[in-house]
Image 1 (cartoon, each protein chain N blue to C red):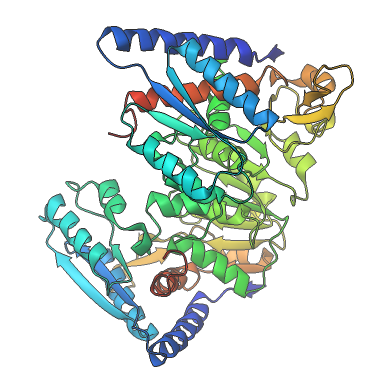
Image 2 (cartoon, each protein chain N blue to C red):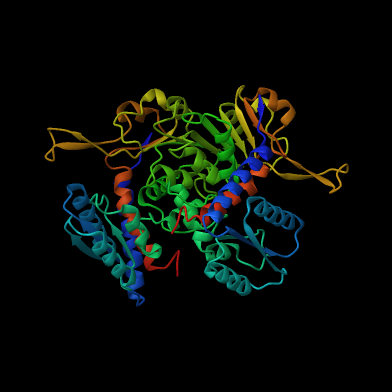
Length: 292
Length: 292
C-alpha cells in the first residue's frame, strides 16, 4: 500500500514551474502574473489567498492582491474584473469564492475573460473540458489527475466511481476520467440520491470521494487493491488544535488504507495539489498554451 | 412492456409548438425563424436538412436554407455565419455536419453566436449544461430526456448506464442524467475501452446505447424490467429496401424487448425526437428563454 504524498508532489511541481519561469525570464520573457480578488475577511478565504500568494513566490510568479470590503457592489467588482481582463501584464486571475450574498456569483464568473480564467469556472472552459478541447481545468480535479499520473496509476479501462456531483469537483472529475487520454475509465457518478452507493463503491478500481462527509467511506465499501482518493475537507471541532478544528476527509483512513494499492490521506493528499494546479494553470496562461 | 413511440411523441410536441407559435403571432410577435447552412450534397445531410425544413413548416416557423458547394472556403462560411449572427430576424441556425475536410469544424461551431446555437454545440452551451445552467442542449440527448419524461419513467436514484462517450450524445446525456432535476440517476458511462460492459449493463435500470454497433445489446445484458433506449443509427446494406440499406439500432430488439418495462425501437424511437427537439430549441431561442 502506497500513501500518496500530495505535499511532496506539489513541492516537486512548484520546483519544475520555478525552473520553467527562470528559463522564460532568462530568454527575455516576462514573469507570469497571477492576480487574486478577495472580498471581505472570511478566515478560510484569507488562508487560501495567502497560500496562493506564497505559492506564486515559490514559483517565481508575480502576484497581486486586490481587496474589497464585503459591502462592495457588484458593479465595482465587475469594473475591477474588467480592468484585470484588459491589463496585459496579468496573465490570469481568480475571484476568491464564496462571494457575499448580494453579488451574483455566476455573473462574476462569466465576466472573467475565459483566457485568464485560471480557476476554470467559466462556461467556455467547462464546455471545452467536456468536449475534450484544451482549456483551463479547475484545480482540484486537475490536481487529482496529475497526482495519479505521477504515481503511475493505470487507469484505462478500469472502473472509476466518483462520489459527489459538484460543479468544481465531481462533474469535471468525471469528464477527466472518461476522456480518451490519461483517464479513459468506465466512470460512475454517485450522489445524495443514489440508492446503491455501497455496492457501486465495492466495484471500483479507483474510488474518488468528494462528498464532504467524514468517515463515510468504510472498509466494507472498498475492493482490495483499489486506489482511493479522498477529496473531503470537512472542518470538525477539535479542542486539541490551536484553531479549534481539524480537517477531516471522507474516508475512514485507518480501516480503508490497508486494503488499498494507493490512498491519498487528508490532510496532505489532494489538498496541497489544488494550489499547485492553479500555478500550472497560471503558467499555461502566461505561455498562451490554450488560447492566443 | 411498452414500446416508446417517438414518432407519435414528436408529432404531439410539434402540435404543441405550432399552437404556441400561433399564440405568439396573434399576440403581435414574430414567427420563429430557423436557418440551416448546408454544404455540398451528401445524401444524409440533404435528408436531414429537408426534414428540418418540413418540421419548421409543421411548427409554423419560418425557415431559410443557405447552400454552398463543397469547395466553399472557411472564410466564406465564417462570413455567412457572421451575417446570420447579426440578422435579427434569424432566431437560431445550424450548420449541418459533417463539413468538408478543409474546414475547421470547431472554428465554425465557435463562430456561431451561442445565443443562436440551437444545435447546442458551442462550448458555452456545453459548459452551461455541465454546470446546470439553462442553455441550448443538443437535440438527441434532450429528445431522449423528453421522451422518458413524457412516458412517466421514474429516474431519481436509479442506475443509468450509457454506452458511448461522444460529444453529441454520450457525454451530454450523462450530464442530463446526473442533473438534480429530472434525471438524477447514478450514471455510468461505458465506452470502447471499458472492460466490463456486460456486467455494467446488467445492473442498469435505464440503459442508453449510443455506440453504433448493430445487435450489440443482447438479452443477457439487460436486467428484467429495465428501460432500454436505443440511439444506434447504423446503415446496414439491405437489398429489399429501395435505398439499398436499412437503419439498425444497437439493440437486438426481438430478444431484448420482452425483458423491458420500456424500450425505444429503431426506427421510430429516438430518431423522430431529434428534429423535434431542434424545434423546441428554436422556439426557446425565439422566446429568449435562455439568453437576452
